[in-house]
Amino acid sequence: MTEAYVTGSWVKKGLGGDCASPDFRITRSPGAIVLEGEIGDHDDDARLVLGDYPRIDLNEPRGDLPIESRGPDGLAILRPANDAAYDPITIGSATIEGDGVVFVKCS
Image (cartoon, rainbow, N blue to C red):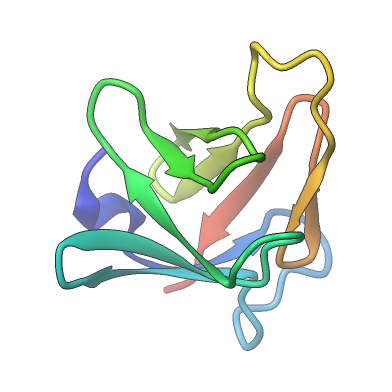
């Protein structure tokens, strides 16, 4: 997964996804790649970490959220696999729970 792949606006896949009101944007700020959007019980931005374990780096007490590419324009945000007591979190219009949520990139 590359910076070019994740940079842009994203909406929840499926009915109701509206690129006029994306769920979040991913941008490059000085020194970091940042997800900007409404994040439940968190600031409205979080750092993205790419590399061997791509993830959204949330502040304690929240655990990091793994991310995966899904096809040419999809991004899955997953719940932490090692957190049995995970309390679901919302990002934009989506609640990250169960198997996670897939978002599609707005063009």
